[in-house]
Length: 51
Ligand SMILES: [Zn+2]
Image 1 (tube, rainbow, N blue to C red):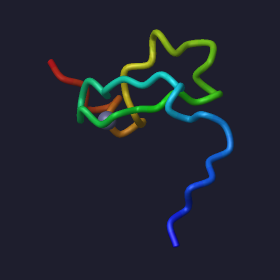
Image 2: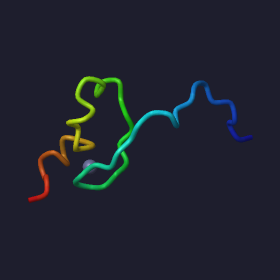
Image 3: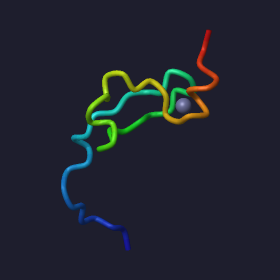
């Protein structure tokens, strides 16, 4: 059986690609205050930022 009952509308959350690995990052509550300055999906990507 497929899960068809979603609670809430998660597709409403904003997302953007990590500038290093291009992986889609979905908005997190912990990013609420600095979402606009979030550029990396993880500390690993933050360390190997592009030149
Ligand atoms: Zn990344």
